[in-house]
Image (cartoon, rainbow, N blue to C red):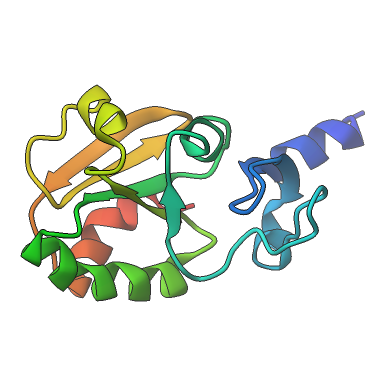
Length: 152
């Protein structure tokens, strides 16, 4: 006889709240409606999350959901050009993947840790491990195609 708690565990994902970084367990079929058990805010906003040294570990390393991180800087023209495309896809593809942005000027230590040498650079993380990387600007269809193998 199958244990129903095991079935529930395989149908749920662990992910951190973008507002308070509390770790939540949510059934996959309820991800879009999920709310944080601690702060009660929505787990998905349809917009990229701003990453920093304080929330990076929780949002990228402590969840089961793939996370695509845009390493960017405010002075970078190509980064500015790609920002609306990245934001639009966040609205389309969440909750199948989480979208996040990391300002490499404000978070130089994190950018150095991931050996970011050119911007924009996109990296996909799964279970805290980098599984894909792409440098340079991508348009919507190209970015969507690149992300397709990483979607839940």
